[in-house]
Image 1: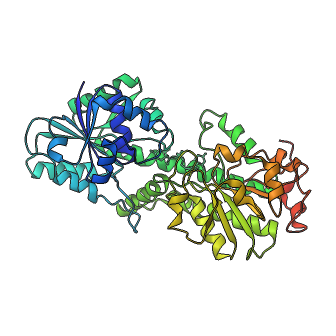
Image 2: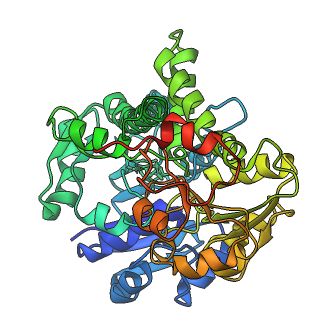
Image 3: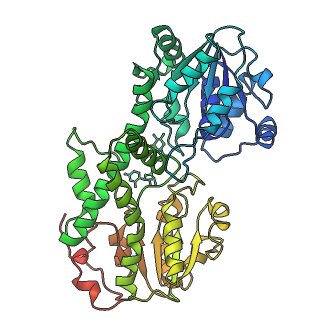
Length: 453
Ligand code: UDX
């Protein structure tokens, strides 16, 4: 078993550290944030990730936390770099934290492998290697080992990966890093540093493209009476397409897709290539977040001023408290700009939105958010919203109207309860229209035709 240093105990670093400890390695995790490290030493986990607290407790003996570089670098041959590379205003990745790690690497004291997990633009590894060589740090080998962890299932994703990508320019380094992952029995893609860096960006950009593609198909479905859920199912059975990431909705968010798609577009632009497809992927996603406004106007009338809109969910997806780039932020901001009264609920993400959108009223539970609401918008498909007592919700609301931004509710069941239900690219249930806010438009719009899919 190896001794491993992990730099950065953010989301990726913490999951990496604890999972490597779970594989039997001795791991020292370092961060410059004293409060975080003190908390971790006391058993407090600074992020919400299912299973993480338990796994840290289970591996306590093989896992230590420090702010002291001397202690962190004491004996680890493998140094995993898991610091943030947040987007800058230009859309490029901010690499200052990576460079700060490089500047503070230990001097000659035995062979080391520097393994960068943070997402960095293609070419960063080459630049780091030049810097290391200039400093005479021949004892440090370089490896790019991108992560593909999804928030909410990061531990599962680490321990059961579809593949592990190991990019290094010499075979011994590739083999040594690959060996760390052998217990996972996953395909190990051994490649050059630039290819490993590109695999990460290309994977995220492709997944984002899939989402924007299905969202555009959904928008066309709304005009033509087709149902995107059946269309996605029919497409997904083709092995060349596959069933994943074809869930239409109100756009992708989170800390990775928006950042990585922009960074890849910038990277292409900086090297003289205009990546047209990604420009469209980004634009489609931005427009998708705003489409709910048009739907509400069609259903409630053109004037949203004074209307009470309940937003169910704020996190960019369920099982996380992360609201970074969440569709809820754009949607709430647009609704406030229209003069609507916005009341929101999220099981765990509300605190993070308070500072960003102070005019949004935060409700203690979903029913409180729905009280006197003219419409409910499902923004995040948290299980507790799917299992809501919708009969009670209907009685609480001023108008029984649901816009399902994630196509996750049972539209037919809601229609039977008397709701007007509108999904994303979905054909309406047969008995939609028992309540008719917004007037005639309701029953003549193509999106409300009944289609026997
Ligand atoms: C993503 C990648 O999946 C992961 O490999 C990478 O390392 C980090 O970025 P994450 O951001 O945690 O992970 O979330 P993910 O589950 O991939 O969802 C991203 C966004 O896309 C969410 O807003 C989600 O709601 C949306 N999405 C996803 C869709 O709108 N439709 C889909 O079919 C799938």
